[in-house]
Length: 424
Image (cartoon, rainbow, N blue to C red):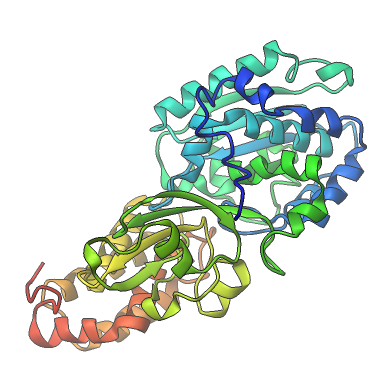
């Protein structure tokens, strides 16, 4: 049986307190890391195979290696806690229940890349999370894990919290940096990447908090141990947020490579009401929809890509046979249209036109040409924006048409939905 790693502390009494964390081996990884050279730590993270847990899946050690080595160049670590992806709630639980695990990862990452300043960017609606972050950071200062000359090592690190204002786009790393600078959260054109020109123009390492939570375990237990968990291309444990039509929605920490069916039926209690599984969004609202035929697909970067989807944040939205897939596509597209920062024309205008087409079809006013029009519009948006949101916003429409085109045809031909035989 798999033993929890990242969530091992979260159900302990007072799990957010520093004394609980210290009593369960907390900050021992920092003590060990400070005895090693930065290059040794970077190499350990590379060997572990850790990939980013925020959606993109970029190798963490490679990202660390991109940071400049010059000691006289100020560097920054930025912690992305702007969890706004529909269906995703893993980061919130980590912050509220075990913030010190993330702080420990931040300290190690900062030491490895030579950063002396760390900023936490947290979604503004996470009121408890903000309080827990602030308290945990204050306690880390009090115990000598932050501030000047950490544990007598000569390494200094200051850390502070910044609340966002709820914009989904600020989950994109460069939009987050813009917001941290007090500007509108609009994505930057890349290159240059944050490792070259980041926050306030300084080289910046940006990580999701689940990624950072993995770091102490890699340092303490070794990169080979971490790499032994998961699949050939997807290493380590992953927290899967499961929601929708399941009996036991929640966060489940499991090895990468656990199948969709295992997560739904063995951990999340199966489909509620004894109904049949119809569809799954495997990695959050921005990832392509899969069908009940994909239950044996492992939840890993490479296996989901092979069937035309993505791991994303690992947030599984489960839908039963009563779900109208046209309605799913319309609702998700409406979300993305609302959250577009408006900088790029394909995203700003294309998302609204795509939503209008889907709304027309769902309400029984669609025409046969509307389906191909939606697909053509998706092609015109995909890949033509500053950030990945342009590609993300077309996924609900494109993937539901791919797998459930007959539902679209039914809406258009019969002017109603075949689920419930009604107009929404």
